[in-house]
Image (tube, rainbow, N blue to C red):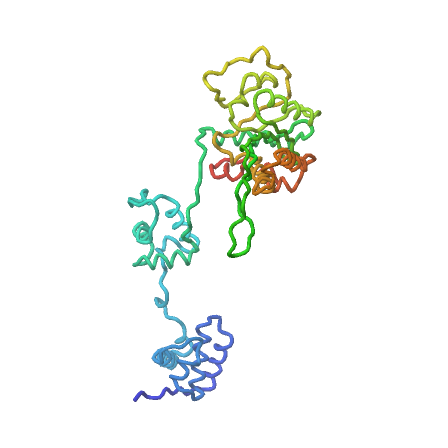
Length: 401
C-alpha cells in the first residue's frame, strides 16, 4: 500500500508558498505552490493530483514536487535547466521570426532547387531540405509549420506577361501619371479599351429557393448579335467617355479620339494608355495624332502599309499613345469597368428580344460616370493612381518613378 503523502510546513515555508501561489510570474510555479498547500492542509496526494490542479496529473508527479520542495525549498518548483520543450530549430535561428523566414525561403522555391524530384513540397521533403529543423518525423515538421503560421494553401492560376519590356512599360505609365499630377489642367491620363457584348444574356449565379432549379437565362430565338463599345476612364477623376456601335475600326477610333479631345479642351497633352491591338497603331490612326515617339516596338500585320493613305485625316490631335505590356489585361484598370458592366447589366438580362433597349441600358450605365466618380476610382483600384503598379515594381526591386 502506498505511503500517504505528508507535508509539514514551517510558518516561513507556508508564507513563501502562499506568495508563489498568488504572485509568482510563472503560471506553472503558481500551480505547483497551490498543490503543495493543499497537501499541507491534509488533502491526499491522489485527490490533489487528479482533481485539484489545472489539469489531471499522475500522483507520482505531485510526489516529485513535494520531494524537490523539501530538498530545495521554493527553487525546487522551478523547471531545471535542460528540461522542458527543446528548440525546434538550430541555434543559427535565434527566434521564431528568423526560423519562419528560413522556412519561407525554402517553401517559396521549387523542390528541384534542393535536389528533390517533386513539383511541390511534402512534409518528408521539407524534413530533408531543412536539416536544421530538430524534428525527427513529418508530423514534427507539420507542428513546426503550424507554430510558425505557415499553412498549406491551394494554388491560384497566374499568367505572366511575356513582354520583355513589361516593367519598363509600367514605369513609363507611372511617369505619365506623375506628370498629370503636377499639371492636371495641362496633362491628362486616360486608360482606354474596347469591349464587346451580345444580345444573349450571359450566365451568372443568382438567388433561388433550396430544392428549386437554378435561375434561367432566356436566350430567345434570334441571332446572337454583337455590339462594340470603346471608352476611356480618367485616372484622377474617374470620368468616363463612352461610344458604342456595331464595329470599331480606323474611322470610329479617330472619331472617338476627337470626342476625347473635345472633352478636354484645355489639355495640352492627353496620355492615352491602351493595349496592343494593331488598329491602335495603324498609320491612318497615327496620322490623326501629333507625331508619336514610341520607345517600345509596335506590332502591325505584315501586309499593312507603313505610311498613311491619302484619305487619312491630318488632325494633329494632342494625344500621346502609351502602350500597356502585351498580354497584360490586368494592368489596365478599365478592364474592371467592363466586369462591372457585365455584373450589373448583362448577366441574366431580360432584353434578349429587345436589342435596342439593351444597348440603351449599357449606354445609360456608362453615362452615370460621365462627370467622374470617386466610387468608381476605388472600384478600379485608382484611389491613388501613383500606387497603381507599386507592388509589381517593388517586387522587381524598382522604386516607382
